[in-house]
Image (cartoon, rainbow, N blue to C red; front, side, top):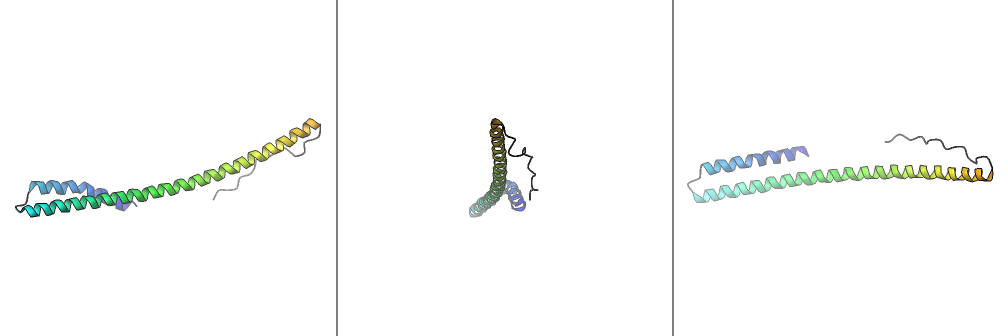
Amino acid sequence: MKSPLLAALFSLALSPLVAVHAAEDPPADPSLAKDQAKAISEAAKHDAKVVADAAKQGAKQVAETAKQVAHEVAAASKEGAQEVAATAKKGAANAKAAVRGEKAATPPAKPAEKAPSP
């Protein structure tokens, strides 16, 4: 991805130098000047397209990475919510048992061990 972008930036940087050189030495033939202007214009359009394509590719890569991160965050949030719900359920059962004067139905919740992330 970096090489097309660098090539485009380098090409864009050189385009003004070509235009300045062409302006310093105007050709004697007007049709030649027209051809040179057309060539410079086409080169600038090509360079702009290369830069736009590189930017588009970079944006796609950023979007894909953001999508992956969002999925990981959602999965972690879901897992955390499930742990909180399980702990709350156990706490509610223990509170009910305490109100009835019974011994706790379940032992206190232990922190869940996390599996290593891939």
